[in-house]
Length: 86
Ligand SMILES: [Zn+2]
Image 1 (tube, rainbow, N blue to C red):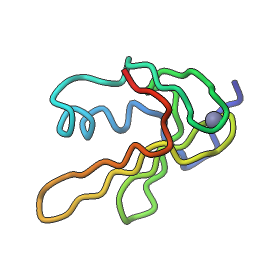
Image 2: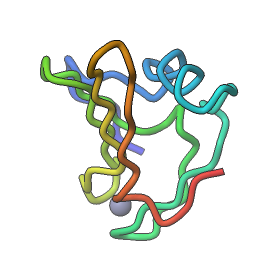
Image 3: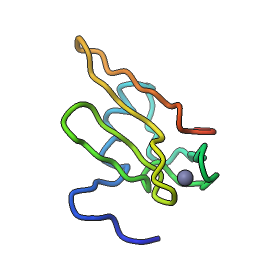
């Protein structure tokens, strides 16, 4: 797998967020991309923090897999790009 571009974090960066949302450590969980079917550990995904929330993308096809948004002290996550997570 190619190295991440500068400024792009890996999935370990969302370990704390996922712990908050799911109540469990998820960086070792296996995600299946809903676009290309790539199977990756969460820790291997590409994480972008453009300022408004956190965007997690597939490193194979660049599809958005997860979006974390913080609103009123509650972190919400949208997993629409994932075929599977667990
Ligand atoms: Zn993909």
